[in-house]
Length: 154
Image (cartoon, rainbow, N blue to C red):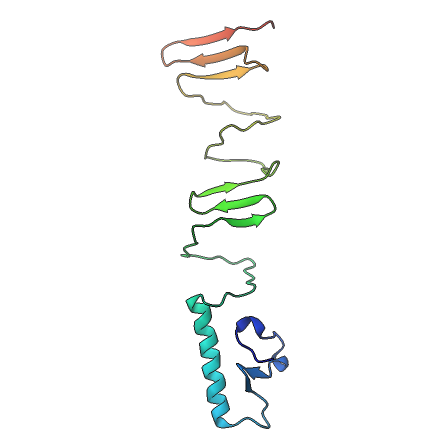
């Protein structure tokens, strides 16, 4: 089968017996065949560079892509995990956050089943730490005064 693009070549050199339909057998190759084969390879390279032919797989293991502008569509990074390029957010499926620390950033509306603090927590003025299923115990500060409010049955 004639190789029409990069995805059709083999990683085994001996299996690549033609370039764009130009036979590469040494016993029958003419000088013009060499020229034509090189032109075909240049054409296949130009197709990839122009984006008219996508590579079927790319393995970047341990490397980096620097200075690359991604499209504005989402990128799937695993089951239930997407990177929303246009908004700059990473959306994870349930139970996907783990590790020893999350430093910086904001997590809004997140329920944490258990947490242990070895230092202080900081709350802005007019923010309250709330306890209990119905938030019946509140501790807060408004910038001038501190408040402890217990409104439940406990």
